[in-house]
Image (cartoon, rainbow, N blue to C red; front, side, top):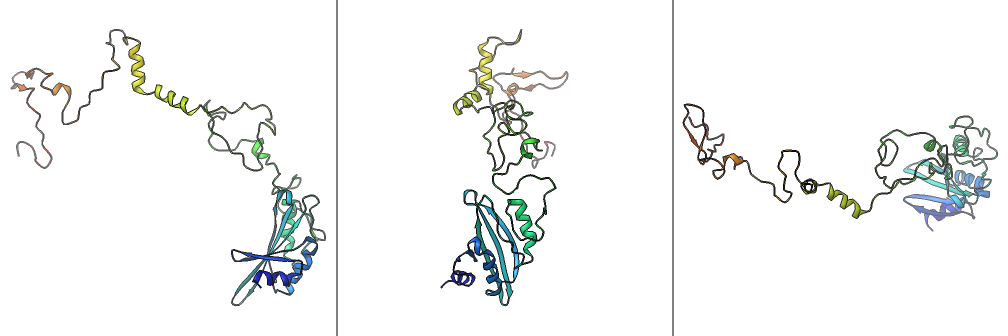
Length: 284
């Protein structure tokens, strides 16, 4: 018999146990909840109450879990005691008579999930403000504030204030409705702009390249008045730094370059002297 089966047998004949990731979980029917808690405390010696909470399982109702422990040498023993209540009329007997520390946990679970705990000595609001409607941790709860007011941060493409660019597909988180279908802006928002197809985007990008723009300008004839037309098929001249500018080419410059009065003439076809820093100047 495994440790999980031994724990389940100690809790009650109607209990089933399983172990995962080093934690034993025992499932019990809701009608045996108080009996299971009592046996866990008295038979298994789990006298420390850690926490109690719930999980919204949608169509399957709510899972209520209590984590119990026993601090003893040489280590700590843990147990998760779990039961399930229906979604409609969710109620579970209070665990306060067995574990007094469950009082605040049941109050929080009551206001967050709407689960009633009959017999609780003071089942009132613990965290939410007075007049709050609904149970925030239920999965059908609508987060109205996400629709009723703008949230800080940069605008996304396609939103107001970001221009008329196309919008990327938005993922709607759970509990947040479409503002055009629910809330004060229902039916007033424009549809989200569609992104252009990949081929159309590529064609548009090609039309915006400098070479294409130059070709378009050349196709229109001469440019500004008095300026020669630029041929779009003429390649750009590529010249490295060591080659100098076009005026330093012997084929395109006169044999003797003009100089200041009284200075010796400098031949244009004479190559420029290249000297590194380590070579020093000519005088050195």
